Length: 202
Image (cartoon, rainbow, N blue to C red; front, side):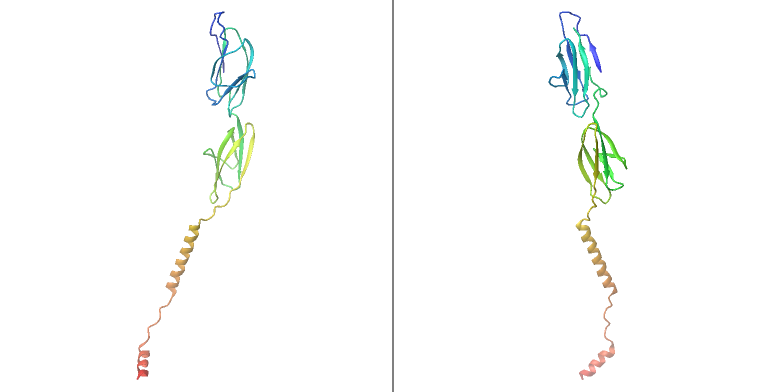
């Protein structure tokens, strides 16, 4: 908000200066009367007496403008709050190809089934997972005042080779065990056969 400060009542002293603060907005800059942008915090900028226009900008925030008039022996201090210089926001709409998918934005789970979220303008990390499908992780850029729609195609997860090998091995072991259990051992020769062989030998 704007705070007007009287610094001096001495007519010989003319400290018509401008101070601009926006502590909540990293990278904020201010331009006065269309001049070059100066980084904030800005303190003690001397200005001529008369009307002026100030523009404040910051990455990911909406632009703030204000008109003011410098008066002799007075200075202005603009302390911008989040209400004065709010974050610029956009809308991200995510549509997974699989029902029951889980969506995370910047590590936070988003409730479905319509994954429509208002986010600060800028880059965000998206994670989409579903049981039996390969996870998808990517970055999405959200523009200020815009709606971005993303359709996420999930592909079925492939079965690892060692799983197939283990299954084949288990089947082979089971088959071998079945053959061993079902096989009939050979019968030993009976006594009569041995006597007959002895008679032939004579």
